[in-house]
Structure formats: C-alpha cells, structure tokens
Length: 290
Image 1 (tube, rainbow, N blue to C red):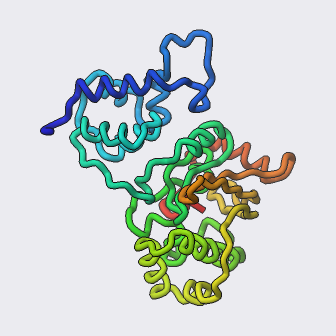
Image 2 (cartoon, rainbow, N blue to C red):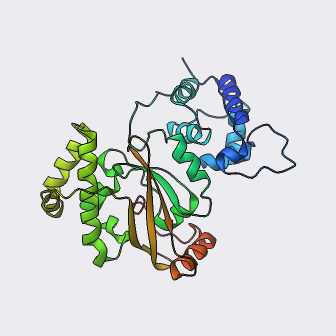
Image 3 (cartoon, rainbow, N blue to C red):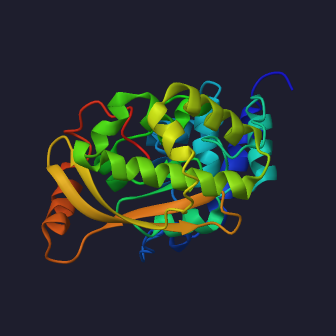
C-alpha cells in the first residue's frame, strides 16, 4: 500500500465505534443518545486524543496517524489482533510485532474492568511492570509512563538503574520494595521459562546493581498480589494505600488498583487527588508503574 487509505480508514473507525455500547466501556447510557455505539468525543477521550483530531480521521481527512495514535485507538475501540493489524495497514504504518511489552494489546477482560474504575486509580501493566494503559486517577497518583522502549520501559528495571525512579516511595520503604520486586521477577522468570527478554533483563541488572544481584541470589520467590504502599505525591505528600493485583489468565498482564479504608487519611487524599488531577504534577517520567 502506498499512502493512507483515508476513506477506508474512516469507514473502519466508524464501524468499530458503532458496535461498542457505552456500558462496555463504563460510560452511562442516556436517554438522548442518538448513535448506536459510542460518540466521537467518547472515543477521543478513551484514546487520549482531541475530539477535533478524531473527527478529522472519521471524515477521511488529516495527516497520517502515528503508530502511537493507532495503538491508542485500537485499545479504545477494543480491536482484536487482526483488526488492529488492519487498522495499521489502512494507515500505511508497519504492523507492530506481537509483544508483551508496552505496545502489547491489553487483554479485553482487564481493559473492561479498568473502564469501570473511573474514580479509582488503576492501570494495566505487564508482568515486567511495563505500563500498557492507565486511567486519569492513576496518572495523577503515580505519573504517566515514560516514552521509552527496551528494558527501561520496565519500572523494575528503572528501580535498580535510575535513582529518580525511587522518588515514588519514601526512602525507608526502599528495601521492602526491592525485595518485593526481585521476588516477583523470580516468579515471572520461572513462569516464562527460557525467555530472552527476562534473561537479558536479569543479566543487565546483575551487572549494574549490587543490591539486585544480592537479592536475586537469595532465590526468594513471591508474585506480588497485594501490598501496602506509601506513595510520595508532589502535591499531597505521602499517601498510604493498599495496592491490589488481578492477573490475566496467562499471567502476562495485571490490573493494579489502589484503595484506602473509608474514613482514612488516604481515602481523603484520594478524593482530593481527583480534584487536583495531573495539573500540579511535577516531572513524572520515572513515576509510573509502581
């Protein structure tokens, strides 16, 4: 194919939008809804795009969408693997290879649950702690994922190689998180078997960080299912929360969400966070995916 097939791309986007019911993505169904599926502005919101930009795409206009935009649309429209590949073909973009990293397709069951956690900080990550998608409360709490690829896309990797990544937690909690991350990675490595991505990450971390090497040699193994955390927020200070994990069937992806007991200081801070949003966030490149 040479160039974007604008008319086919527009028709395909509209057809996928029409088939999704608001309830499928956690949106209310109002009596005045005149379209069979989602509205254009709802798709743009789910994909993190401007409404004007998405409208231009559906009208068969505008510049060639980037791979990042196409990936966001594939997630927002709940496209299957074949449908996602078709979307990339129509936009004259190389089809991304199948991967379990930051460009992986979010498993529909986890994405559906994430959509229903509108006011609860939540995100889907891989088993190597690479953020795939997050809601706005999660972005306000832990920051957005960095725009990097390779090992540095993993928060575990950054935890042991980038001192700035540790600003997410109070210094006195760092030893606990180091132990939890390494024990979790041990379990993931065993589950994946002879996996090149994991072997290279472990080898690199052993070379670069003595703490990691020491902890790895203890052979402690424990998947992180729940954890009590104290998260350092740039505007609200330390927020004490519980972190919960729901695993996909194959264990390659996890839905994380954060909660606090009703009436607690943490619950009050989460309510305030929903008002502040991301407007007062300082640099967050290293904060995402706790």
